[in-house]
Amino acid sequence: MNLLAKKLNFKVLKLLAKNFDANLKLKNKHKIVPLVYTFAVTFAFMLSLTRNNNVNASVNPYDQIPMSELEAGIEETLDNDSGSYIKDSLDNIKSLFELVNYGSSEKVVDKEITVKKGDTFISLFTDLGLTYKEAHDIYQTVKQVYNPTLLKVGQKILLRTKINVQSETVISVESMLIEPNSGIRHILTKNDQQQYVVTTHRDELTDEINSASGIISGSLSGSMSKHGVPHRLVADFIKIFSYSVDFRRDLRKGDKFEIIYENRIAPNGKVVKTGNILYAALKLRNEKISLYRFADKNGNVDYYNEKGQAMKKFLHKKPMAYQQARISSPFGKRRHPIYKDVRIHWGIDYAAPKGSAVYAGGDGVIVAAKYNGGYGKYIKIRHNSEFSTAYGHLNGYAKGIRPGVRVKQGQLIAYVGSTGRSTGPHLHYEVIKNGKRVNPLTIKAATGNNLGGQNLKKFKTMVADLKKSYSTMFAESETKKLAKK
Ligand SMILES: [Zn+2]
Image 1 (spheres, helix red, strand yellow):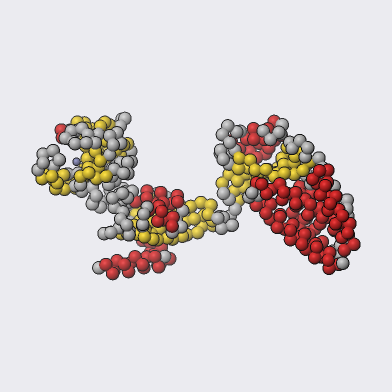
Image 2 (cartoon, helix red, strand yellow):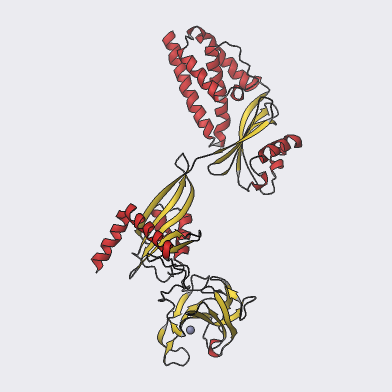
């Protein structure tokens, strides 16, 4: 008898533990109600085994007994000789079943609500059937730790409510969980005086550094995700290279990428936030471009090549938002489309729809914005003593663009057109170095934001450390380089 009791107890215990665990996860909305219910029944059974049959099922035991006590109770039961209660208890299951299910006037139900367009924090609760005062109480309490107006459409809120069994209406909110960002949970509960209190739990996050490398086949983002690189980082990766690589033109099948990046990890192992890209490299057919993230002593963060030259300050190769723009005429000798003889083409033509945005290729000052013969509508920007850029065949100028105006790299300056000697809408882009027009695709000059002195020293140490830590990845590319030579 004694053994049977223990066996039975153990089974119940296992079931209980399983249900509780599943219940805590609150993953599946549809599972919640039956689980709470199963829990109530099993718990009542446990209670009846250990104590007596005097269980008041009209108040759900779930919200009366804290978890810690509950666990203590379970252990007690295991050691307890509860054999004499076994028959009574088994009889009681049925009656408890009925009590919990039909007899009580209220029961605890977990709900998951989703914030919809037009909802306010208050209306979420008044819609459930709470009075304005009750909803306002919850609002005021939550406000101590979190601005409830920051709730976003689609945000989910978990509620433990007490509902009237007959009418199915919500009598009260017993507790609530809001997780505005992964790793941060605001939990509303009631204290002994039945007043709302709120606490915030923050997962302790740890930084993890990951690396990945692979051959690019198909799209870059597809290839990177195949190697486990989070999607958001792909966009960052492209941005880092936007000053030196034209992804449409330069990338070929078989090129390789390398990346070292940070992740912020929650205790459960989930990636909460993707962090920074510490290192990014592209191995193109003829060259390898490696970029390292570095914060200088003033806290300015930028990406530098191995020599400590800032990549960001290079002039854009394609100063346009329309990344599909293709080169319709390269720099250098060509047969002129109008004069039909061989002439040197002093810029690059990017074919793009009329009206496409044209950006400043770098920071600088507008020195010309006027009609200029064969160039048609034309802009020239002076970037520094060494470099200028020019833009031809424009359809028009962006608002405020006139000589003397300072512009930022990537700023809208004009629109693609076909003015001047032109056969169709395209941007004619020139880079002028020391007064001579050079190929925009091959310029390698920076405009002076390179690292020097202490910064450069620190940078070089950092690069060396990174190479040591990820020796396998770096060694691989070094070997390949040597093999090529
Ligand atoms: Zn041209």
